[in-house]
Image (cartoon, rainbow, N blue to C red; front, top):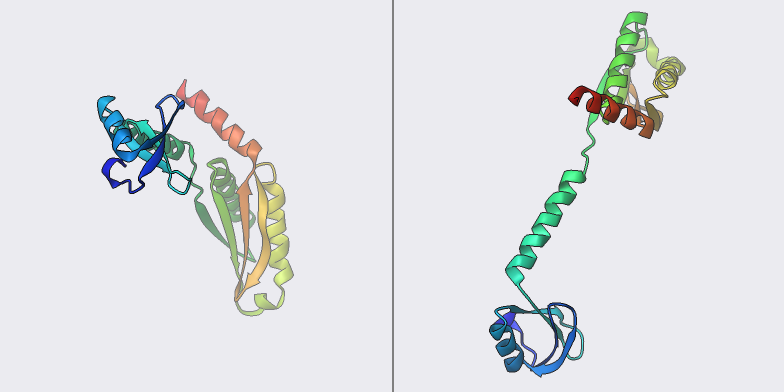
Length: 178
C-alpha cells in the first residue's frame, strides 16, 4: 500500500474499475494523493504490478462487516451424549428417546453410548438391537451418521438431525415468537 510498493512502474486502476494505464510509481502516488485515496497493490506478480486507487480504511471496514454477517449465518453443531444400559427399563428408554428427539430438534448431534458390564459383553447384539430400535423411533428427527460400533466395553452410535427436523424446530420457534 502507498509507500510500501517497490515496483518502478505500475498499472493503475481507478476506483470504478476503469484502467488508467501504466504509470511511474511517483505519478501513481501523486494521483492517489490528489484524489484523497490510497494506492493498493492488488496483483503484485503481474508485469507490471496492478495497483488500485481505493479508500483502504473503508475497504477493510466493509470486509469486516461481511465476515461478521457470514459468522452470524453459521450454525454451530453441538454433540450431546446420552448413555444407556443393555437391560434398560421401558420407561427409561422412553425418556432417552424423548431427550434424543429434543436434542435433534435443537439441531444438535446425539452420541448414544451403551455400556456393557460383565457377561453383557458376550452378547453385543442386544446392544445393537437397542441402538437400532432407538434409531427407528427417532428416524423422523434424525439419521444415523455413525453406525453402532464397539469400542472397548461400550458401543456408540451418532445421530444427526434431518432437514425436516430443522424445519420443524424453526416453525416452532417462529410460532413461539408471535
